[in-house]
Picture 1 (spheres, rainbow, N blue to C red):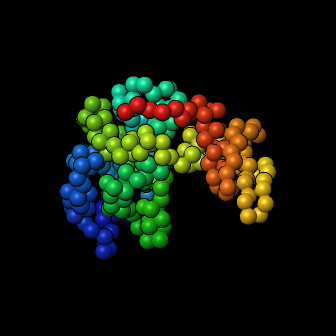
Picture 2: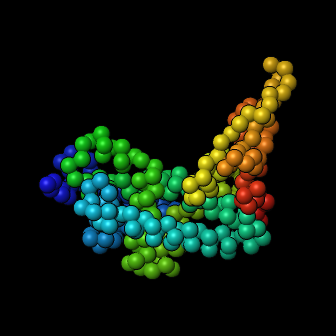
Picture 3: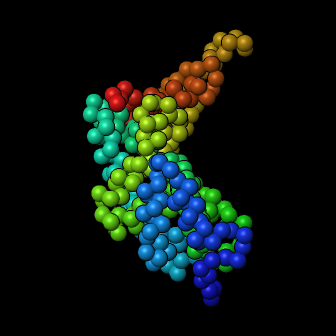
Length: 257
């Protein structure tokens, strides 16, 4: 039987120094959320940052908190978008929310808050290569953020964590609002929640070799939901993905700030 180890004898910073760096180094967006996470009671924080691979059982890992935190995060962002963009359609609001709360976005916020340091501090005798892989995983980082959000919610209630969440995601809300979004990534993230995947097919290549135009389709569950054209295959796929998003109800209408 392995023995739990609170900290690993390595060159990694101590828990105290990591808390200082993750909280004090933040200015502006995310500082309040970092402070609330740092101030969690030790037993609550340990639950948040216990990975399934070294938890005595799955219920002792961050998975249940991740489930709750996902809903808290979505509600906080949905409320912020609803209040900020009164003229936006339901489809447009859903599109922005999908981008803001995506795994990629959550992992980015987790990196900014340096949440991996807490995870490393909770590790058992995990081989360094495996521990490094876990701590750098996008899915793990996103899960840590959602679990931490749930823990703060349970400690302080929705109103307190809502403001901290919106602050931490402020830049991402603005970026998504402007429409500068990777349509292929956005479509993939939207479909991931239902376990569906998209495939792209080249329908045609038009024009002479020096002036090619590609025609590509976005195919979901065997149905062609978008067709795009572009001077490169990638550009054609982006347009096809945008059409597919619109067909699925994630319209690209303008948002009034």
